Length: 100
Image 1 (cartoon, rainbow, N blue to C red):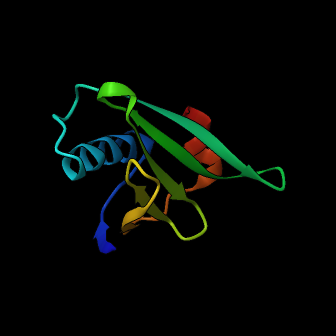
Image 2 (image 1 turned 120 degrees about the vertical axis):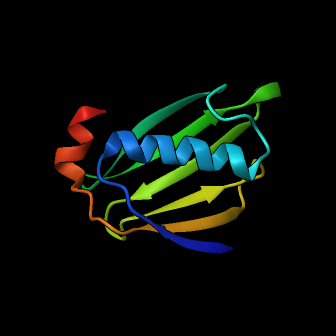
Image 3 (image 1 turned 120 degrees about the horizontal axis):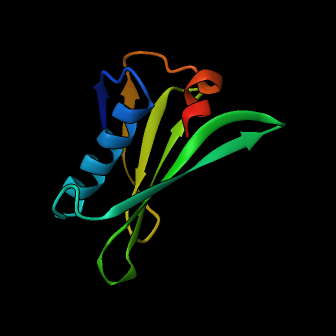
């Protein structure tokens, strides 16, 4: 599993980074497919975001931003972890997730 580190300042940049990375990892053209997100909640507190890129032929590619570790884990179409990326700037789960 590949590990990287990137600078992301806000939720919009995070969504763009996730979409671009999922497309690159799967040889899809960036910006063509819809990406949706769901707020993840643990013990009543926001703890992350589940991103889902809806690709061709009903392919769904996932990524999860974890607020605690401030990293994004990317999953392949069969559910295997394929990359983990740490964010250089700490995103605040409560303030950032209000915009979703």
